[in-house]
Structure formats: structure tokens, C-alpha cells
Image (cartoon, rainbow, N blue to C red; front, side, top):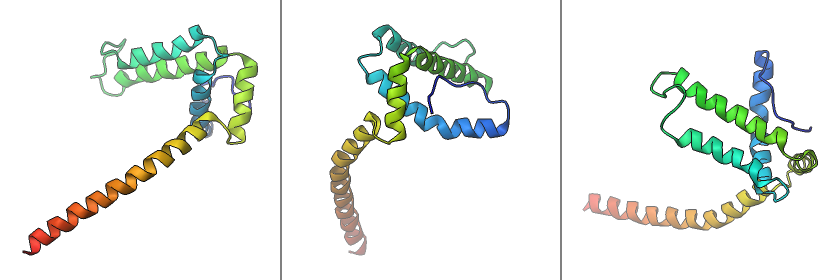
Length: 141
């Protein structure tokens, strides 16, 4: 399973298959963006995509329903496709192998974040429970 970008789907089955692969493409882009073997000028493509999506002026204004968002989607898809296709082939293949084994940086980063946030989440839950119990006691008085 080597990703060399993606082509527009020809039928609904192909579109569903593409949607199913989107998390893999996301993980691949994350890995390539962090890899020092991918040239900085190549990574600037990601910055250009983000800049276009954030910049308030578009080719087609966003206030036009549906069509206004299609130019953003097109820039995103074609930009990411360009980024993946032009990354060094051996680096892409290496990262795809890691992703297939579920041993990539994004997985590790998410696990670390979950570990850090899990403690915070339980503290937040306990604080909310205390506040809610005080509110219930206040309502019963």
C-alpha cells in the first residue's frame, strides 16, 4: 500500500474507498511534515495550503453556498496530493510501512497526549461533580 497521491474517484464505491483511506493520508502527511528528510521547500506547500484556507479572500467567495467551499476543498486535495507525490519516494514508502504496522509518530503523539490529558480530564470531571453536587445541595435548601 504505497500512497503516491490520490486520483478523483470514478464511482461511489471509489469515493467511499477514498474516504476510508483519509485517516491514512492524514497520518502520512503528519509523518512527512515532521521528517527532516523531506525538503523544507516541499513542506512550504503545507504552509501555502494553510495560508490559503485561512486567508479571507478566495477564488470563489465562501458566502456562495456549496461552490464557495469547493475551491477550498480543491486547493486542499490538490495541494496535499502535490505534497505527497513530490516527497522522496523512499521516505513515503517507509512511513506507509510504519502506518500499516500502526507504529507511526501520530499514533505515538496521540497516545502521549491521551496520557497527559487523561489525568486532566479526570480532574476536570471531579471538579464538575463537586460543582454539580453543591448546586444540587443549594437547590434542596
